[in-house]
Image (cartoon, rainbow, N blue to C red; front, side, top):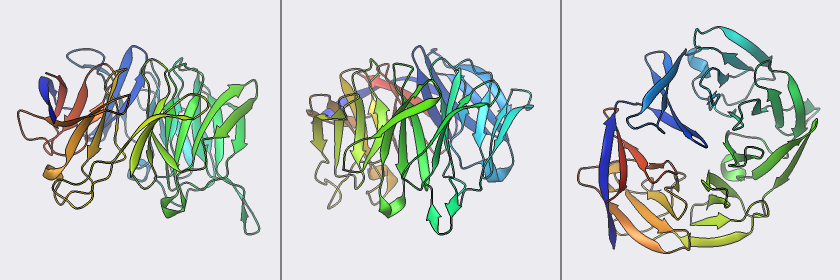
Length: 323
């Protein structure tokens, strides 16, 4: 079975990551020492703002841009730094040094008034406190609340829930696990909980607030979860290999719209060009591979509005929908 894709547009947005809130879809791209922010909720995409990039050692953390496009926060090895489009530092929050510079991440809530971030904890003798989860005032960097988590991140990603209140945090600890947390700010306290006993990686939240999508740590299945309980609603096993012995879901994908998701099986292929994208209904029905009218390599990035992106090696981004 297969589903035919129709090309909507092509843009020159290279090396992008996606941040999404109701009515806005930001693509963040690093180009020649500048972070360029495009709003993909517009068609064609419109440039929102530009930010000078900090030094090279800051390049690996997951950057956040405020929903109004006015502030970018870069998680660095030893601090969080908020800058405006002129490159001026708005505030900076110093912390212990990450062992791996790519460990840190941060994200704004939908209203843009709060920034959630992870920073290293501390040692008491040989005992590690666990990574620290912070909520900061977006305009000043003032810490509003903090708590320690039972984890030590090699990488992480924040995913705001569609209610504008809750924040998801997906932690990668390498072979040690992949804990997933949800939290909210209650006054000066972070109320949080870890999802289930099985390690799962958070991919996306439902565009209308009807749960969220994860992939198992070892990538053998994807599942839809109720929110806030985390109970599995539906799921789909990874398809058996067509051009390889075993095929597993990548840590890439999400909701194309409220009824369908798109997942990739690229990582385990012999070549990137052998990878495939799969369209799956939220009831678990696998509708098959996506067939494109031109060669497509790499992962797909669903946008939740009925479209998704692919990017080629020349830096061109293509926006697709179901034909």
